[in-house]
Every structure is written in structure tokens, then in C-alpha cells.
Image (cartoon, rainbow, N blue to C red; front, side, top):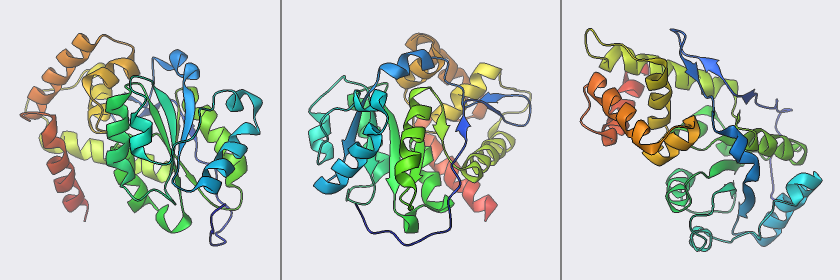
Length: 253
């Protein structure tokens, strides 16, 4: 499909459905996971042979092959099908646009969508994955020699409501969340377990509709939690999160 350097044998990332953030806060749990198996799959790749190679790898599992929609060569083509949530497989080797903002636009066009990024080895380190994870991309497959065997596993993990993300990326994310709470939480305030879940999703660029879908609550309830959370953190709106993340990264450095 695409040329790759011969890396060391990669370890498959964990299928993550839940975890812990310091003070007993449940993270990464998709309470609306039962609806995900109904998602169609669509490859977005500007490389025709590459797209076919990805589809062929998915079709190795008959159940996944049945979910495949025709691949698209660009974001513009994918946007022509609005209000159709899908699991998008983004070919990071061929697409010229940044994958993070692209996933945000696709999600806005089709709320409820999930995203799996296929990355070349030289762009598959933690420093490359972290920004994409913050943009709400749910899984990563590096195009190492065994990627065709890993891809169906990663796809099934996402369809079942999990993540397919290296443990070091998740650990860094959790540390960033703890730093955020230490830095921003107003004196005398604390987060409920639900607010902690909402915080993670806000930190990953998800809107109220997406938060509601992920937590299996109404959009109105999601908006209520977001408002309370922002107040407790002393933030005017969700657009403050990029600058907060930047300051956290500076503290880490």
C-alpha cells in the first residue's frame, strides 16, 4: 500500500473502556456504546490503491466488510453525506489537511461519528498523537508491517465504545487533566463524577450534542453540566481550553 520503514514490532494499544483519574473519577467510558455497532465504516484517502488496501484489510472480517461505504477521496466528498454518523478511517499518509480539524468538521456534519487515524511510522509518536487525541480522534493504527492484522481489531474496539490508543498517550492525557484541575479549579469547589466525564470530553473538542451521545444523556443535561463545569474552573467558555492546554504544556516543559 504505502511505503513504511521497518520499525520494531509494535504492541497493540489497549481497548480502553474505563480508567481512573486520581480521585476515583471514571474516564473514557462510553455509556451510549450500544448504538455504535450500527455505524457504517468509511475510508477517507486521496490514494486510490491505499483506500482499497484499507478496505481489503477490514473485509478480512466479514462483519466489518458489510459495514463499508464507498471510500471518499477528500473531506469535501465525505461532507456530502450529512447527518450520517460513521466510523471514519482517515488515511494520514495521503490526506494533506490536518486530521484533527478535519475530524471536527466531519463530526459537526455527522454527529455521533468516531475516528480512527492511520499514521505513517515517522508521525506516530506521542507528540503527534496527543494533539489528535485532543481533537477527539478515538484510535490510532501505525502502518507497521502488521497493520492489516491490527486494523480490524482497532475498528471493532471503536465500534464497541472503546479506544485504541497507546497507554503512554492516555497516561499523558490523565496527567494533563490532573494538572488542569490543580491549576484551574476554584477554591472550595469539587467535581462530581459526571462533571469529570464531561471535562474529558470538552478537553477533546466534543460539543454538547456529542457529549450527550457519549454519556447517554440529553443535550440539555449536557449543556447544564458544561455550564457548571466552566463556572467551577473559572473559564468563560469552552474556547478557553486551547490556551489552558498550552499553559499546561508549558508547565510540563
